[in-house]
Length: 408
Ligand SMILES: O=P(O)(O)OC[C@H]1O[C@H](O)[C@H](O)[C@@H](O)[C@@H]1O
Image (cartoon, rainbow, N blue to C red; front, side, top):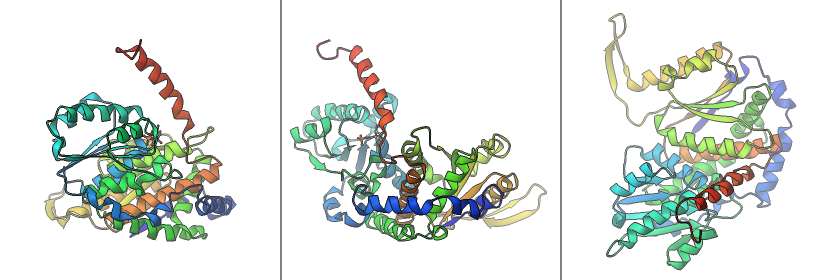
């Protein structure tokens, strides 16, 4: 399903098994397991407890519109675009950019749509405003033939849903937003999008069994967490995920929030970046090879590409080469891995059998566990984001000063 290769994190000689064993990862392991066992944190429970029957009524709509921010939408996009990147019945409204939102609302027929308004707090400005844009359009229709489902636990949006008798699905309170893809937040829209959510959860459960292993060399989440922690302490605090599968672009956005927002506390944290191979070999490889040595690269590759074709072409010496198209990108990834290793740039590799529901469930769950472990290593709370609140207060004050806000 998924394999993890860490040899090039050790080959370059900056860290050793001895360094790994000096890290008190046993303590990090037991602290995370305690939180998961006593229900303080619920992102493991949900992959076992979700009753999928409640999502069956969500199918049969031509379009699926998802409105949300951060953890309320990025996991869904990560899985949808990985598995169904070539379909176009999904519309994700995940920003306050008028050009993006209004161009989507101009082209989607809301009468043929199931519309998800997703916000755990129910108070997120962008989701609230985007909901009002949809509400305004629905009120102009003679009759609304589509469906609106709110996925929220409270706040203004829950009050709005109750007032209008919309369907409401809730999110377990002990599952933080950026860990909520395996709750209704991801499962409901993914079910509407025709994704087999039972296989998503099956993949996550298989990865959970692997991540329950106290033997660090058999626990990719724990080992990858310790390797990134050790390299951070050596000044390599930029974590680049370089995916040689372009349909993982949105997974990259999910990864960036998960790592950045979970660990960026009290002066700690990694700077997560996404690179897409092979194209970024022509834009960022120069920096990775010969710029500041402050990065660790995680390659994500696949054994099988879902589309492939034999290609016959002449090389630069006019000699004929015959291979599969996938051989080209696989050679490019391997060459980049060798070049970076030769240049002393630490790198690890995750190889998926192929992109499907199970491997995506496993990949996202592995990183949820990794971030859980890393929070214990840094001794920070992986599950809150207090520093984002200041901007929100300032923003609401600024909004009140513009437009004919209430009783100005
Ligand atoms: O789900 P919501 O309550 O709307 O929150 C959406 C997002 O916004 C918050 O500000 C946090 O930064 C994120 O962790 C969260 O995922």
